[in-house]
Image 1 (cartoon, one colour):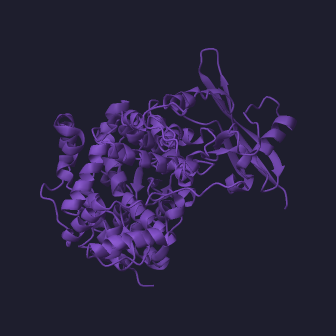
Image 2 (tube, one colour):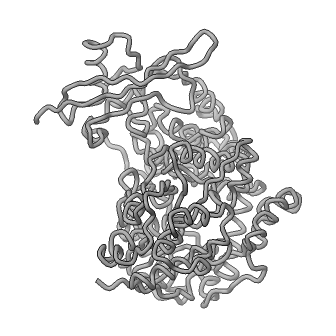
Image 3 (cartoon, helix red, strand yellow):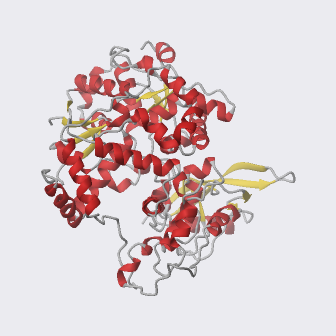
Length: 328
Length: 275
């Protein structure tokens, strides 16, 4: 394949004496083949053009997770990203550090905030009343998916909730939590679900699915978060606004087929919460944005009732499952 | 190609964001798109797919994602389809053949309507108005489930803005989250998302923002003033549904497009361009 000259527009970052970050963009030109990886290009730039360029890297094989950085708008592993895929029409590739974590130098960030959340979910098996010593072949249908995680932090860097909240656990930590909740050997499954039902944990995911799109290892963290929520509710942890909202939807569809938005807020955040939101309600009313108090019934609602009844009597397992992992 | 769809406006489109539904009907009428009602459709789920009988078209991203995700799995996992159809049969409901496609009205307008017809209807072009496209999440991700370009590849809003004679604004928030789904559980964070995305668009020169989703509309427009309070900054960026802007540049009646129902009024900025 023919070589082409690309422009690497690299964010250079320096922490000054007073702890502020000074950023500037620097262009490096480099000839490369379309399938050359961004990491190889960065190494050539560091080796031949500017030795002060700083980034993390180690395995070059998308398994150590060190070289995660923002490349042309999204967080990717530099060692797994071909230049042609991320170059714009003018051959420009933008490279900057991961976001949602403090910058140390150039592309290197302090990964402690990310790991702090991972440690919070106790990323190890615990002895306890729910330990099951029988581990069957299908036991890992669920776990296989999330064990592909290499803790590169890409999902956390692109997480739209982490952008506005440093308390939110983030996709990787929650996917890891799901891995332990689903492991038959784990002894504290229910205790984990109780803790995960608290604030800033599984119910604070805004379901933007950016982590599913970003993850270089196809872990699909948001899917794991949704499954955690279902398991938490099944264990009776239905007290927060998240589960109450879900239950309100469930009840309305069963009864009328449609949402009763008029009472949805009160059923989600309670009377006191609703009073706190009165200002917002008045603000919405100014433009006539008030749902009808009389819920609309869809035609054939009795069929919906039948479907719910049948599913409650004989629940269906339609969860996505990962394929069995065999040695390549 | 006959452009006939079962129309699935979604809960917000039927009530609090009914201006988007009214605008959708207006532009569909002008562009020869027939939108059939779905009287038996419930809040989004597999039942709605079966009810359709013809391809579905919606104006809510979250409905689009829910319906597309179910449909994607039905088409690829025959055992799941069989299980679900077993339940439908027991409930006295006709089974679903996994044959229909789930579309967004935006895709229909941009990709299926004859471009010459669309162009001929634009009687009041935007004259270079700087418009920020806000895609929202659930028409983009996970990209593999959709029947049109999705993920980072999706460019429907940008192309529509260009067709209307406007200039699409490139900014970091275009594919981020409006926070609608954590509006009640994490109200402060939700408002921060609204503020961050709107301010980002404004900093990049946007004079107006459009979205293809009734839920994004509600966040970015109705919640913009509350968001200003959280960040302590004035934003003042008018936001409207893509169908409303499309209707306005077709010269359709402002009342039919429900422009008076928007919290940050787009009419003053549209007026400067003769709309």
